[in-house]
Image (tube, rainbow, N blue to C red; front, side):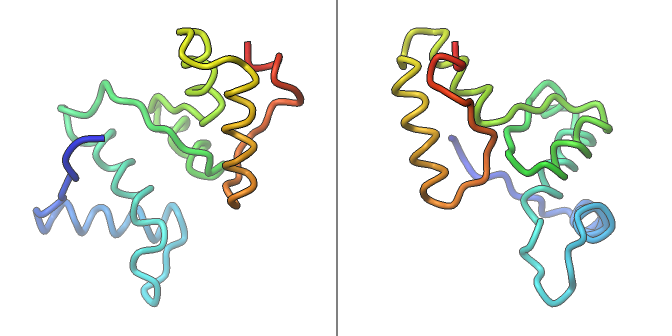
Length: 118
């Protein structure tokens, strides 16, 4: 996944904090809650080097907000379908992978059956 991206500029950090609180409902008592969503939104919207990137999330509120901001967003199901389309996974393998994620408390949109991933 590459190197971690650090937002070190104080003004940028303050803007991320505003997004975290105002958009995603982050509280001062839990400073890490929704921090990743806020940072991602800020980078994709405000930093030119990230504007052509897309955001992968299964958080419905984050997806809605990102789409309203004109950001390109994908869900896990979209990524799995692309990997299947490329021939690197079968539909059954993709479905099994996604089911394993659900079994480990990930909330994501699941197809009804493996064939729906084609």
